[in-house]
Length: 113
Length: 112
Image (cartoon, rainbow over all chains, first blue to last red; front, side):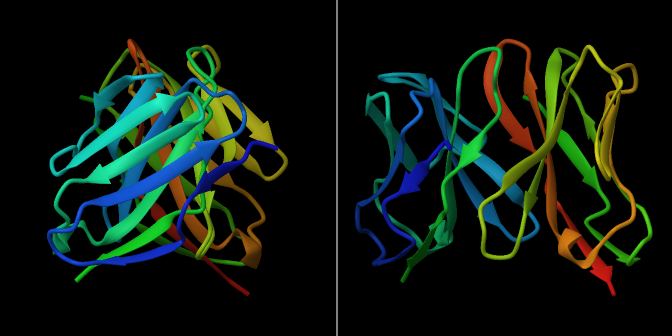
């Protein structure tokens, strides 16, 4: 079974802190994604990566950055956390071009106070 | 970029009835159309998908239909059961990128 693991299930951070959300997949997938999920807004893509060190902006990249130094790990960084970044963050991975079935992590509920 | 519209946002049915959820998309180059189910407190999981070279796909009580000309696709659940209650998301991918763009979701409630 594909396993996508996010480092934390719940996080509470203060406004202005730099926050790191980590995601690891164990199936040698090429593509990795970060989404945020808010009630009534569905899943919105923040950033995605189709190869090591490659990244592309999604639909809502403002206030976020990402890092992919190794194929299995994709990190989401909140440079200076703000209260409007309180949300559920979901990481996903997919095999690659020609097979885009996505497998999700369990999610990180981030609260910024 | 791709725009995915999903309707309805909530759907309540009686056990045994059918449920239909519809999605429209904007990019005619899109070629992969999955549906995900998310139960309360759990991660989204793929339940069925279809590619642009077919018009319909079935898996037991679940089916997806695709109309590429009209750029819409639908999820059909027959003989609904209480365990079908969840949020369902449609998604679209393909063309020149790897992005998977999701609809806003449909909360399906199946009443016993």
